[in-house]
Length: 351
Image (cartoon, rainbow, N blue to C red; front, side, top):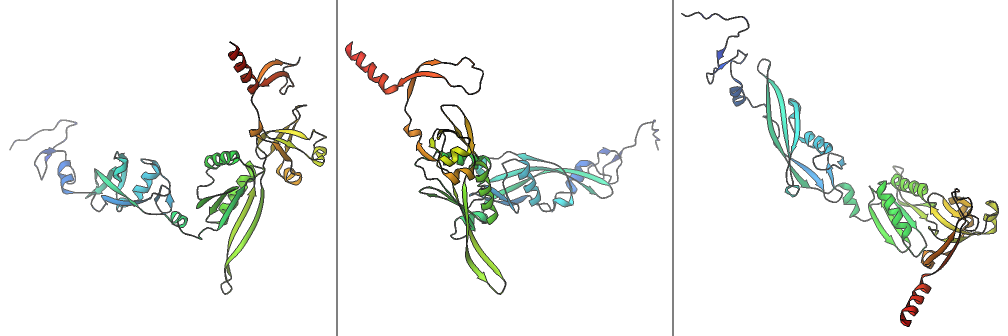
C-alpha cells in the first residue's frame, strides 16, 4: 500500500458517492451538483399565483385594496405575501423579470436558502409567475349601485362662467381629495359629490372652507330606524355656495362694509380669490381683505366681469418720481383697439 504524506495546509479529498468526482469532505459526501439534483428546496412553494386587479380604480387586492405601480416595491410586497410556502425557507433576493404590460402576467425571480441534512445549506433560484385576474372592488361595486351613498356635498356658484370650478378641479386633483368619491354629477349651478361615509363628506367641506370663502349648510335625513337594536341610518347633505366674485371682477360695497374697512371707496377691483377675497381701490391702490363671514354678511354686488372688459393699446406712460414702491399710480394714455383698426382701414383705403 502506498502512503501519501500531506503537507501543511493541504486537505484530503474524497470521491462523490454519486458521480465519483473529487470533492472536499462534507457531511453528505456528495458534490454540489448532485445535492441540487437530489434535493429540491423549492418543493412546496407555489410557482403560479393569481392576484386580482380592479380595472375601475386601478387597485390590487391585498386585502385591503391598494394602489401599486408595475414593478414597484408595493407590488413586490403584495406578490411575496401571496406565495404559499415561502415562510419555510430563507428569502435571499427577489427581482422582477420584464413582461409585456398587456400579457396580464408578472414574473418574479426568487433566490432562497434552506438547511438540509446536517447543517448543509443549499441555495436555489427559481421563477414564480403571477396571473393578474380582473375583479371589481367593493367601492366600484357601490358606484354602480343606486342608493349606496351616505353623504353628498353640493357645490354651487351662481355665475354664467365655469372658471372657478375649473380652478377648483385642479385643487381637488392636486390634493387628492376625491380619491374615495363614489359618483360626481353635473348640476345647472355646480357639482354634486357623493361619498360612502359621513367623514369623507366632512373632509371635503373642510377642504373647501380652507381654499375658498364658501358658505355651507348641513342637513340630514332619516332613512331606516330599528327601535329594538336602537340603530339609525341617515343620509347627510352639505350645500356649499361659492361667492360669485372672481378675479378681474368690479364689485360695489355697501356703506356698512365701507365703514368697517376704514372708509374705503365702494368701487373696488378683485385681484385674488383664495380663502380670503383680495380687493384693491384703483384710485388709491389701497388693498383690503374680505373674509367669508364678512362677505356673506354684507354681500357685495358684482357690476362688471371679465366678459365686459375691452382691449386697449397703451400709447404713453408717465411714471411717478418714486418708482421703488410696490404699488404705483401711473398716468397713461390709451385708445381702444377697435378705433385703431378703423383708422388703419381708412388710411389704407385712401392709398
